[in-house]
Amino acid sequence: MNRDLLLTGIGELVTNGAEAAGGLGLVRDAAVAVRDGRVAWAGPAADLPAAQRDLDPFDVQGRAVVPGFVDAHTHLVFAGDRADEFACRLRGESYEEILASGGGIHSTVAATRAASFDDLLAEAARRAMRLLRQGTTTVEVKSGYGLDVETEVRILEVARAVGERTPIDVVPTYLGAHVVARDADREDYLDLVTGEMLEACAPLARYCDVFCDRGAFTVEEARRVLLAGREGGLRPRLHAEQLAHTGAARLAAELGAASADHLDHATPEDAVALREAGVVAVLLPAASFSLRAPPAPARMLWDAGVTVALATDCNPGTSYVESMPFVIALACLEMGLTPEEALWAATRGGALALEEPDKGRVVEGAVADLAVLDAPSYRHLPYRPGSDLVWAVVKDGTVVVG
Image (tube, rainbow, N blue to C red; front, side, top):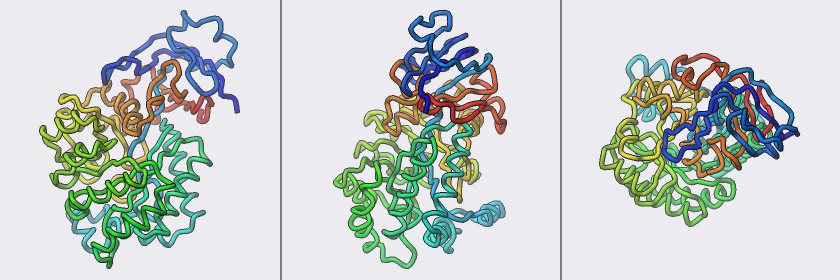
């Protein structure tokens, strides 16, 4: 596979090379040289070093080039769908009411438990390819639709296989603490999540996550799970403050989590704690959009100095969204971020949330993950929501789309 490439004819290049968050480091009339899957040089085409001119050329004909999107929060491996529940929500039923009646996450758990490894892999790989075609080159994938040892392991094994069988990079997360399994004793289930299930899943994951919210797990329960995960070698991250304000953001700060995700009910005091602890705020505008709920206070978090990332929250119940360009548009139109901030959060912010420092930017030494837009500027991403704007995708220096 050729991993050496020279992108020419770039009308506008977003490097994310500036130190400050939101600094896109724009270069006009640019070129990017790639060797062995890494950026060897990026800058004005007129300054291209002679040593980089022997590479295979890829003329993008005046289009804009941005870093590949890094989707830092998804539930990509599942079976079935919940279109009927979506219709119920439109008729006025709440997410919590649906969950309490045996629907919601429990519905997906039943379908996922019944699905084979091959069936789960086929569906998840198709979703991953749709993400890739829309410019996503790295995706975080959580378990959490098994709620038993066998299925949680199978989900993480499928996630790993998706990363092996498609061009997209997969970062796996253990989410045994999604909700308490139906008909399970709460304390017994917590013992399982922090014991046998964790032991089986830890070798397959990088992170441990907990849905800490009303109707799911309390702050004390989440602390117990995340500390057990840390003992098992997994870095903590946390679903926090989505449905209500519970103190989960403060817990993420206390534990030095890689990220606190959702944050729809975060307060200015939470923002200070997250900033001081260096916890990335992963915001999920498609989830609040789908739930018809007020979005996270992105403007407040950004202005408070918190590092912000954007992600799809791709899942069958509350955000069946596979498009990071659409998420960027929502972040601008509904959360108040500028186009520059939203693009940075969808690329560099996501890379920082997943602790992938060599991604989300186009500078010397970075992984050569790029999205070529069928537009002259990155500003078309929020300007044209729902448009098919990704013309080509480069993954590790290889053109994999377009």
